[in-house]
Amino acid sequence: MNYMKIGIISDTHFGHPRFEEDALKQGREGLLMLAERADVVLHAGDFFDVKVPSFNTLHSVISILTEFSKHKKPLIVARGNHERRSKDLVDSLKLLSSVGLLIYKNWEVVSFTKGGEKINVLVVGNVPDEDARGVINMAYQQNKHLLKDGFNILLIHQEVNEYSSLFNERYLSIGFLKSLDFDLVVNGHIHKRYISPDFIIPGSTVATKLSEEELNQPRGVVLYDTKTREAEEIILNQRKGIYISKRFSNAGIKEVNEFIVQEYSKNKRKYGNILMKIKLMGTLKEGLSPSDIIVPDMPYLFIDNQLNKARIDVKINELRELRDKKLSVKEFIEKKLVSYLNGKMKVLKPVELYDELLEKDVDDVLEGLI
Image (cartoon, rainbow, N blue to C red):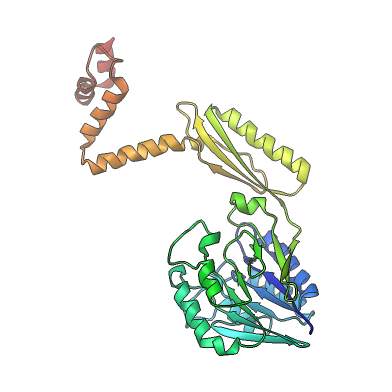
């Protein structure tokens, strides 16, 4: 029997506004690499980054798929959440499928044979995650008679509780997916790669979320052997992903800026092409705000500025208290003055100072205090 090699790729996000160049370069490399080595290639959704790609993006993708088609390998694509449109509208995947550049199906089984082996792929495009169990189960029951012979694969694009930070008891779970009795489940949507003999998330081919997980794991694709049920990770050429977090205490603008420039320059020298995110935490000196941090223009550097977040959260909670307790502005300010000045002023009580400021010019009040 001739067993098959299954190429697995997902979340190429062609046309991504920030990382369009990287998405095209890395997506192309992944697709063509699998075209050379696999018998069939599965794409688990979010082929494009937007529902209606630009003509420039479509032109680039058509060029990539034309190269891919020279290898005469089928490319099956599931719909991701980024491609989902109303039923009466033609989406980008339908367009490419209509001219034979890929195979786009939904709620259907696509079958292929090689020698004595047959694989059956049930494709179920993305739906709202709360509905995924019911929809996938209906698609499975509807097509179960086509899954009796061969190596059966479920191709989807959804959240899965065991691999997602967005836990919801109505979302898909590994237990539910295993109950459907597929030999292999391939899932997209989640950008970190997870591999087991019967469940594969290939991860994205381009970093888009810039999370710590995404930047610390190189982008890649997967080649799966139906005989051994083993998967080979294939790492793509890409910028070195770097995630750094730094906590400051009463820092000045110069200290923060010097840290950013030093970290970027050090890693740029070491790795060359980099994609870096720096998370700034902690506090600035009194009187400074996060917006005072102005970072020099450095390619592919992204700053998550959380400085003074705790202080800002306190102020937000105070405003919520004002709303919840239905305090007047006058009562709220009096409360704050008492908090700030109690024990620090002996000439006037904080509440008396507030009344003075309401009735008199500030300079007159200050002169009276002196």
